[in-house]
Image 1 (tube, helix red, strand yellow):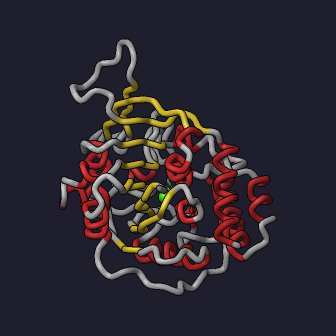
Image 2 (spheres, protein in one colour):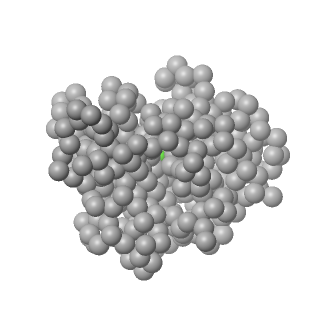
Length: 315
Ligand code: BDR
Ligand code: CA
């Protein structure tokens, strides 16, 4: 039986690829997409999720909109990397479907509680919806199979020296999500920066020669140029698909037990994930090292999964 996943995201170019990877991989079953404000405002991230579901011909997967701002702080978006639309590059796709009425938080709670032990949550945006769902129904921490987060870093950040965007945008929500009792796997910048999307990968996708491939390559080209301009990187890290790849093929990743806490108050460090790996001399909290943190991945094999998924969806 394939693993059932509910993806909470803020598309976002790399979120878009994460949606395609999840929908196009038989190892996982994408049961729903919930959207949150992050890379762009909620109306845009929701529209983008619908557009990706349309161009990817993703049948029957509900898209449900969630929170339009972080729990406490003002929203900060990332147009420099994803454009004013949140999905710049290709010609806009007019969605052939609408968001399901209702709120993402209710949808997350209902989906998890109706199938205890079956659904894994994956978050590739700020953790606002996830934290709200935990507050609304704390039992989801027991009923979900776990939470996989693209977010955080134990090395360098990408917004501040130490903070990663998804955690930085809503650190209070991240603190709730990491603080719950469910198993959390952090797929942070330390591994996603190993997933550099080369021009060769883009050429492989282009070679598939279908409209979905063209859409994806045009989006990735925008993202490539943005990363070059903003960060001076030749090849952009394709963050969000890494979290999906971890569920499709965990063997492609090395993870270590660790304790993850989120800094909320530091004037220089707010939004930083403080990661304590297990090991000699490490002062543990009573909770111990109960999270898993990804430290390495096989990027070639991960991009094979991405190309295969786009090939399958584009047939
Ligand atoms: C994360 O920030 C967003 O801009 C990306 O979509 C990804 O989820 C990387 O820090
Ligand atoms: Ca994202």
